Image (cartoon, rainbow, N blue to C red; front, side, top):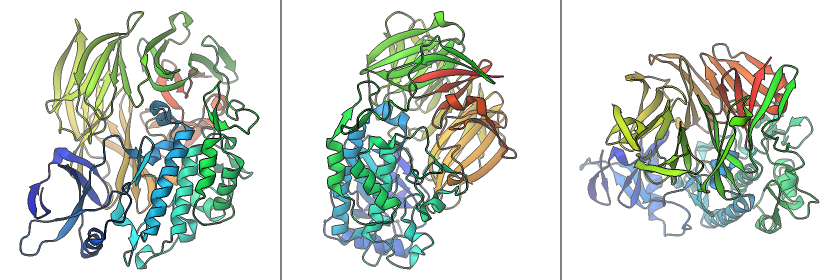
Length: 624
């Protein structure tokens, strides 16, 4: 793609695409991140011209347009986008803070979250002082790395005569529900502070202020309009959420004013800072809570880690605790020879292994110092580690003996510059190299490989079936995605339901069964979050497609945590394991599993039962 940037004609490289959404694609070029609109127009051009003409009054944490991008028509050049500075590697969406597994894997604590939002508070206040209102302040257009927040998508902000034309329903002030945002400056600074309060609440407690389940008022927006918070009687508080008493009384009162009383105004920074200053760490569970509390509120609500030999037989369900850790499980997998988990425990990465019904086969192996953000895979006898999400390095570690031993080191390519692409199945490592998807086995201390198919450098997303030679992925060419399925040596092009115009892909997962795969996509369109389901046969045929609003069902909030087989999906919920029939949407709850399963747990089919991977243990359940 050729464009004109800063008076010079340049070529944008598809291999440098950083991301693509419903409205635009962002491509790296030298020191710039260049945003090119799918559908440019005069209104966008006028707004961008006013943005770049402003005196530099925005905080450094705001990634604003700096140079306009034009098409190559010399007679009547059209503004088609802009260039902004590149953020350093490692920034991720604030949405990740609400996910317990992400926090555990990256060493993110409650004091860290509080400090991060204190940092963002100053940026938001400075934006308002400069005459800007974000409007669509949501969990995808605020990024963070360490203790610093960055604000993006400035081209959608409201300023001067330019409106913000979109809002995300789970974060926008309910006072603006139903308002036509295209007809003028609808947002005020207090609307941004409401959205900030939602983001903070969700990041501290891992639940939306109007989350949970109510039997009659079922949607988040209806609850928000009625100011029916997650704390009111009649709302089932999610098991995955942190206890409200991990907040202090002053902060709880601020949230009460925002969400139950309808107060609006600048979030009181002093209350947040005071809260951060009085947090103490529990010596038993590692949770943080205000020192004024008489005891840790988390320890009073969690079940102690059972001894691995413990086996419970109840009416309709048999439960065996395979693995228990005093830390946090950050990776788990079931292989033919057993169940494995990596936990971050007391500053170390620790490998656990177990086999149902065979306590003598249980094993614990200390690996190395904990590496925040590391990604793991495992094949028989070897652990594969990607220590840095912004680097291509893969370390292969021999775990067959009493001590871990480095076996070899290799590389793989990144997706979008920040996600190493690799997988493992049936004794083989899958990685990207030289424009190909490679399948390799370790023989005599060497990686012996063969190429399966050609791939797009730096623009290939891939998932591999845990115990089968089956892989599903896509290539990204600017705004288009080409999906494919690999079954052994055979490759099939697949065609899942296309996204609507302006619909953004915000996350993807693949669930695998013996007869094919289920592609699960999170998307956002006009401020509404959706889940798309596409069932794919082993011959590459799409046999089922559906799009549904995520607010109407929490079954797919955790991407990739479900178990799947031929039209049937099993979900972990606070009511127990729920079986879903894709064809007709029929649901069946296995009530006997309720004491052992919660939303956010991961389910893995294994032998004659199912594994339930929790944050601190792995259970093996059999029904009947």
